[in-house]
Length: 511
Image (cartoon, rainbow, N blue to C red):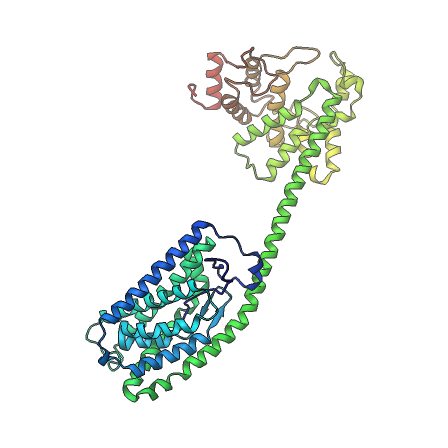
């Protein structure tokens, strides 16, 4: 067998070499090869072909015609021609033939001279109907790989490969495997240049399984040389039958596996397409969800003009704190937390306008009505499948860490983490926003208020994360437009408060 051919692809696609296991059904969608890949391929072909020519010239200069067994070499050439004309396709990516046996046998008995005579016949036999660049590459790769075998055979000095049995078996096997390896690595390199696939993966998928066969074929070639020494050309004929039988068995194997390979590749392509479609659909669905939620909150803001923009700001700050606390941004927890933060006030839909939009302070009775909005929001979201996981945050967003909140009086870690984080963002935004019944509190005072209520109203761990976020995002710049700070748009904290923040957040005060 000889795995020495580039794949059969249309000659009008310069340098194109399909990836391992490609087949004719992909011809209509062959990718455009970049200019760099094409020139790299032609550079490889030029180098390999030039090396082959150089080896041929070397053989011609070192050969004495009278010492050459011409009859034997032409017999090997004829066998190589037959092998190339009956080669087999390996899933469309490359081709293999039994030409290795006569070529390697010629290498054993005549070295570089044998290569220079037999290889051209084999290459010409395989050239019909194939682009010139493939023929040149095949010639060079066969000559180079064969010359590697010559070097290994010659390194074992004092051996007569026709008579010194069994000592010659190991050197011959090493030389055969080295020739196979060089040949297939060159082919894999050519494929890799135009498919941007690693040489290792191509070689492993296409050629690794052939290694044991080449060890056997090396032995057959060696035995063929020994048989010629003992019996003449009749000895060569004896060893033609085993390779023919091997070709039939390999063809049967390839016929059985080719259909499976193509079906698997088709299934892979279909699965990839389905995955891409599902990914696009999920992304579209996610965008639709977000758009729906933001439209809902925009409608609520339009009804409660006093808190316009509050939901977006609080959701943004909540997720910044969540990130600081190590919540994975690709997790379900992150998604549900962001939805709960955005929809925390959705229950206010159930609050009468005279209470929701009252310009002054609420009475006790009105506060009782207002305090029903977490439960109302919970019931609204619980009925929507994709929002149901977020409803617990909506229900708990007015609970307190010390258990003094509503509606259930939860305490400490009984409160969902998302709600514990949200309470801080919500309180800070509320304190630094104008209301009809009071003006916005300066940011520094709001920050101090959060510090004072750590451990009572707020989770201390969430407070530390908030302070870290504030130190990074808000100090020295206005993150929310509604936060005061003067015409210059800067927030500057007092040195004492900066120090308190740094200590509480575990940060260096010089940050």
